[in-house]
Image 1 (cartoon, helix red, strand yellow):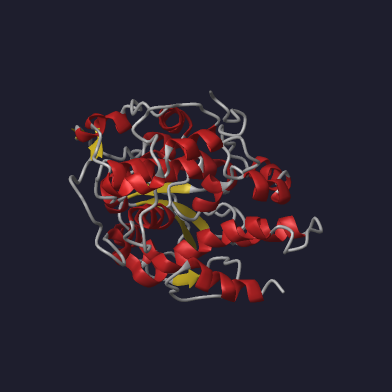
Image 2 (tube, rainbow, N blue to C red):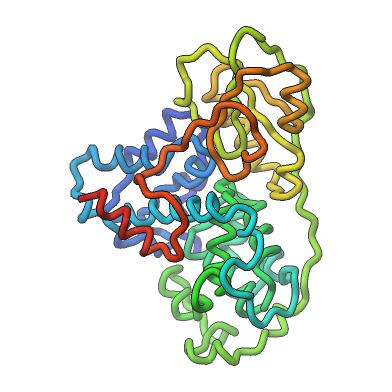
Length: 371
């Protein structure tokens, strides 16, 4: 059964259309239905991940409607999870690329099950979600957790490659959120592994399957052997296809604003006279590859919302030396450590900074600022 809202999983790219999505949020209904695949979710994640809008902006827009913060606490918490993962990434940097708190247990491979890649696991909701991911670049958060659990805790794959496979196809690809969520499921960034049985999947995905390899009580997962169907692993190459480099027209009398995969903010220095450059570094996409669908998406977002944007395919240092750029501006991000120039802070929801070992220790600090 397909219950995805097709009109929502086609993602518009003009700022006005994106704002319309923000205005249509029902934060109360979101809180009670978000775990269901037909729930009142926002479909804003690609725009948050690409830095077109911020979690702070969304919260401010929702609160303008007169909602009480306590009334929509679950909605605010879910936004805060995004900032939490970003704070972990900012503080741990490349350490998130490896098991963060605990070593993953019971690993049998460092790949991904062939049937997962082919959407032939036999779990209808999961196979539907994978096909939907390939088609639209979107997957419901609950399904992401189901697939991570299937991959890490049932097929016993190390979390990193399957998480990179999912990241590759997501329009909202954010390595911090993606990697740390997968580690949470695999038990390397939490105190226990996450499992979902068939009954749980049926409930939230409106399927009705019996006698699958997930149709077991939760206590049986501890000793569950990997089903034969998941044992054959797929060897796949994840490669980013970048556009060809074209010559830039740079006004040397003006400063230059550097946009990238994580910053396509159309309001950032909107009224300033600057050179606007979308930097696509091959080294970045070699380490964190994404699909052509995702690249096409960010290029369309930038061209439709960033006035006179030009694209440079190459490394930051080469851009600076080739065009003799001197006055540079960019936004803070964990992957921008090698940038040089003037760094602007991101828009965080709360004035809470630093590493917190758990979301709820982070949330307690944030919650005080809501009161």
